[in-house]
Length: 133
Image 1 (spheres, rainbow, N blue to C red):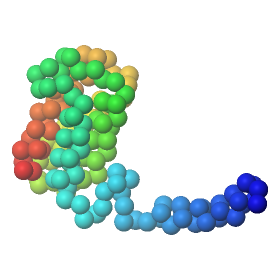
Image 2 (image 1 turned 60 degrees about the vertical axis):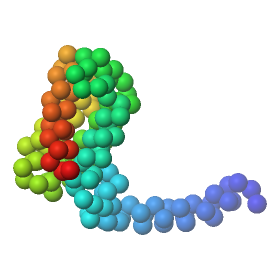
Image 3 (image 1 turned 120 degrees about the horizontal axis):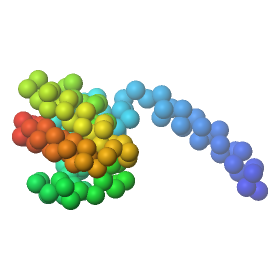
């Protein structure tokens, strides 16, 4: 059987599988589930982003390479998805995380602004981690 015939036979099966997956309302785009603990999800995203960040107090040395921007973008998405389910006392910090990561997720932010936003992010992220643990 030639390749074209194989693709013609398999393609409908692949498309049906994709349609079933895309129509599932049980999953969020961030890979979460409606039953996920919001604190666990947000704290995990903060920790994952933190693996690429310079130590606290050394934000001026931070390289805002694509990998760092990507992790901060992921933290932004997860925080947006789960912030409304965090304890009420943590919502102001979650709003700060959402705002700072939204700006830090863009590659065209001037360096001085990136450093200032990173410091704001860290303070708010620390509040969430402390409040969730």
